[in-house]
Length: 564
Image (tube, rainbow, N blue to C red; front, side):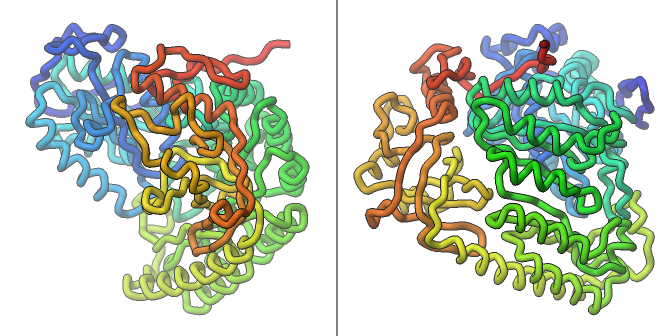
């Protein structure tokens, strides 16, 4: 049994369970483990898109505000935590398999860890509701996309009542961006400008699970961006299911272009990105805003889905292939160096070989830097799931392999054009698989291409160094000027291209190599030193930044409107 709302209510859906924490330990007063005197720990696992990643940051922020602490990396990898939250996706057919595979593993972990709680949120939770607890009765909490704010309360209620709690709201209760946020990165951040979607694509279940589009006011968005920059960030990505329809709710169809210009003008912000637009609503004022705002990066993700006009019509995608190609032409006319990526679905019901040939034609003509390619999978609750002429798996697989081969060739060709160019790379916290062996660091160019860059021989030993505190050598106060930290910017020349990345080894041959220290790099180093216990919480950033989030990623409270 599930709930109806508004307002939502909780329904116990499983047999009583025992807990290792006292029932009096409320969500607002969590501060000590029942036996060891430590704060209870949590892990949030994310399955799905960028919107889910950002939602997970809100879940983590709420848990920390309620008194939980993030599990260590080793404990998180082994699911050794007092609370494990799985933030689910429902877009692909294998979404349920991924969820229940995770839950099956957690069942044995929970059996050996009294008091552990498991919560499931996100799109699949919104869709399957109490069915999750019926199938996996060891789950303690199920909550949906519209009531993220309920997570800490539901955990406490489940603990107190010793029963599973399922709470699903049918409409947005609290705009997620007003919730506490634990940012995973100090140098880049997601900023949601809208939630939900008003489109009716026949293959997509997102509007059903996330509801109609709701737009944030520009002042709220700018306040959040300014707070991120004050915390050290130099890059933000504006998020929405359909960003270029932003403003329709409050009657301004030109609002997204205006917002791009306003965000791009925030002092201290160096890179602005957005995802994802819709070709039907993509207008020339947005192209102009991108081209005329130096901080808006020359990168565009433009979902194609199919190159066949007949299939696009069946998908209820209100554009045709020539309009799509025309958008790309205008983008490249305004920004010749723009890198354009896309989404393509293969094997939509009724797709013929002629339809698929049209997709191959448009993909080749589009010169995408990369593409997210998918085999169509019917999603219950979507119009396309009931269409006739569902294609045999073997046919879809064969077409998919041809599409991937074509896009690999296109990506290789487009990346080879970058060889010899000088690019500025924002160094990332993660690394490539071979970075340790090759003494490279990894980051993103302005156009969002992945770049592995070699550091000069004189500083390569610094990448491998370590000390008794476990501190990353790049976070040391005396770090070499030529050793970039995550958040720093490095100017290099591209020396090699592959389908999915670039290599820039110019520093090894006397070519361009220049590190620009940033507030973001300072913020990252301060955070790492705090984690190692070498600095007190609240250590200030350099270069005019705000206070560092010591001991963990940045936690932002509810943003406030700017006042004149």
